[in-house]
Length: 177
Image (cartoon, rainbow, N blue to C red; front, side, top):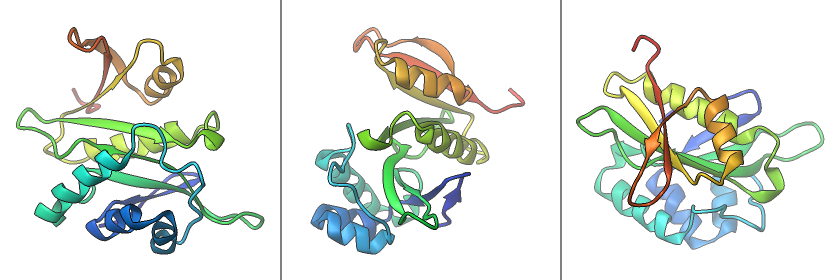
């Protein structure tokens, strides 16, 4: 599976080997990625339960790499090493309705620098380029203004509220729709 590149990031799709390395230790993940893994890793909702879910899905279908997690690595500069700044990805391949759901999280020390927008824009463009994806959705809490700004900057539009959870739903569709 190919990596994706943005202006500052290298996005690496989670494979079974990478997820297993991450479950083993941050040092094992750092070696596999060739990047520094911050001490506050993992960010946000990207926790052990999510990793175990990804591992189970990728063990069952290795070809699904790219439909789960992606590692967001800030590429090295002359003065800094490559560093893992966040993760994003999908809740799995799109359903029969052509909808894929995306999520993302950036480690606290790298927030408010535009990395979340770069990550989401690249993932959404990548997904919408696939013929089986018609729409990408994301959910966030109404009080999470930073996430709302990221989604709106990334071309998402408000698409409703989930009555059960109170979360708001945003959507991005193919340009010709």
